[in-house]
Amino acid sequence: MIGIVAKNELDCEYYKGIIGNTATVRIFHGLDSLKQNHAKEAFVGFVVDSRAVVSGSPEEKQFFGELQKSFPVLRVTINPLSQKCTGVVHSSTMSEHDAFQWLFDQCSGAKPKAIRNRRRRPVFLNLTISNGLSASEKETIRANTADASDEGMFIVSLADKKPGDRVWVTIRDFSDSTPIEGEVRWCLPWGASSHHLPGFGIQITKMSPVQISELDSHCDRVAIR
Image 1 (spheres, rainbow, N blue to C red):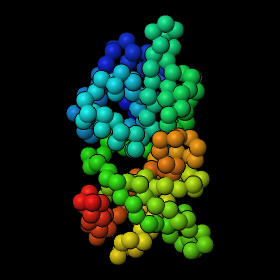
Image 2 (image 1 turned 90 degrees about the horizontal axis):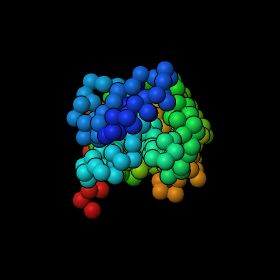
Image 3 (image 1 turned 30 degrees about the vertical axis):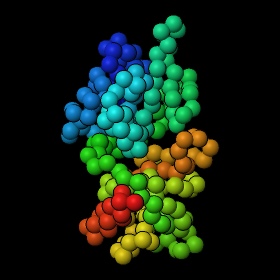
Image 4 (image 1 turned 90 degrees about the vertical axis):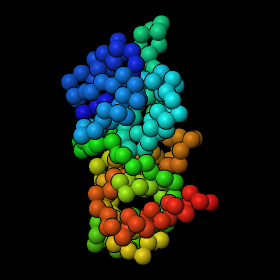
């Protein structure tokens, strides 16, 4: 399911028309509406009208930022003269066709998931990435986190990943070095944005209670600084 967030009903119908039969849609008339009514629903991506972001409260803007870290999010604007829309993906402006094609490519084959309730916090952890539990040391990639929670993390890396890839992450700063299992949800290649580090966001599928506790401790220490 793809969520559409726009305050104008006609805009909602326009975006819904573009998506067509590609996916089921759920319409929300504002970011606050999405924030308050997303419980028990699972999504693969979102279309968000720019006016819903610009006119949103600070809390809504923060919620939008968190949404971008977990899902493919296409930010769109309708030109009142041409009645066509343009999309913004990682600071790059695209035509209507290219923007929605990007969204469809990102959502294709993705497993629907709920919007997380725990906000990711900035934390810089040293880790290695592998494609399987039996990978050798030479097959691992060294990287770092930019932010994390017990539900997911953004990994700063030049590794060639795509949504749906399975990864095993070993955090060298934890006493529990059991590989954390996750699935790549979105990717940002090098050079795609001048406002965000390259890498990929993962949804954590398996993490031990000890690791969750250690993550909270690391995040708390960063917050105190």
